[in-house]
Image: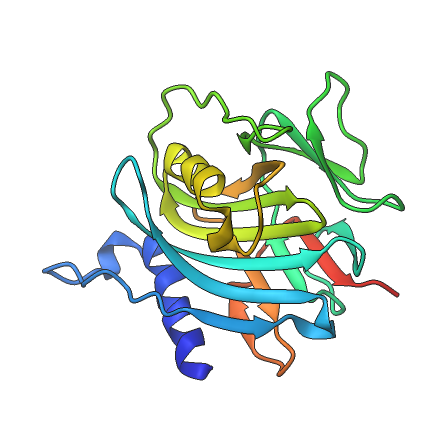
Length: 223
């Protein structure tokens, strides 16, 4: 497990390494070793998987957290909390709103009204509500991303290494089994770029991924 965590740290940190710190010639692509662990509190599973972009051919490593919707509570926080089993960066976006509260964790299309304090505007959708393929325009940028998705009774959080929106959308639509689910009903990017981070406490106390800084979505076992 320690080796797998070290490999994940390399895989998820390599895309944010300052240019001055890189050696010449460039290092080889990081290894992405599949790992499977129980999330602290028994609220889900965390896995490390890899896929190849169907459009660009880019190799992508992903930390995936698969949760049952009825076993956890959530909140939007200024920083990770001590009871959080999972924390994910929440950045600015467009087209979707992630909301927490007594009714649970929701991902809905953005409205014209500004979101409440318990919600944040994120996006874009990479799987439109209803499972439709999104219109992503001409964005071909490849950056790390954090995605929140829903598939039946499952809630899924994913942090990828650098990936284009188009490759990400195809992976979620065409290969949901890779992320431990059936077809995604909806999914949206909730953070992107150098600040995109996802961390998980496992049942043995180990930490997978990179702890987020700034505003986060905190997931903890339901009381």
